[in-house]
Image (cartoon, rainbow, N blue to C red; front, top):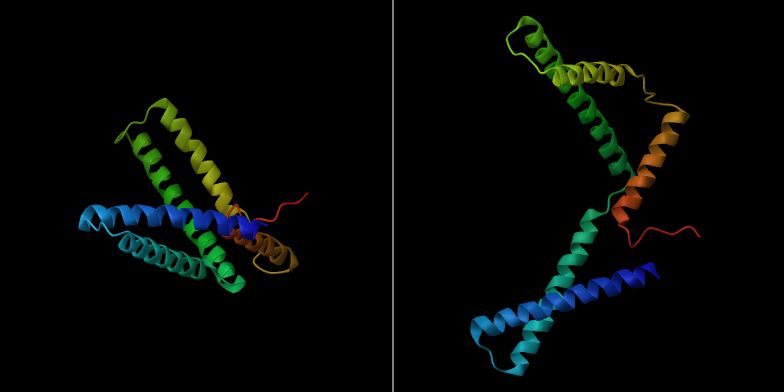
Length: 157
């Protein structure tokens, strides 16, 4: 049913885009022949259908690629946390030295952020073992559900 709904939705979009393209061709080239308009409409729909199906093919990733993507994202996240931590520490040091004074609200916010960033960076995450594999499989499954989109997610009744 979900596949049928997805196909119907895609077909409706393609039809509307085909009609828009035919109108554009009619306005631009003043093709008054009904056969020419049909030709432009059908060829545009076929072109759009081919493009959309090839885009879907390129979007799908294997479980190994998803695992690599998730691990890379975690590394980038940790690097970003380190950068933000250094920035906040520098801003607080400048405030204490009198080079750049912060408002009380910003000072409290940056002090809290330093504490939270340090706490997050110091958390020990398992990088192997059954617990790590279980968490990774959950993340991969969630990624696949997100990749499938809202129309293709199986519904639990």
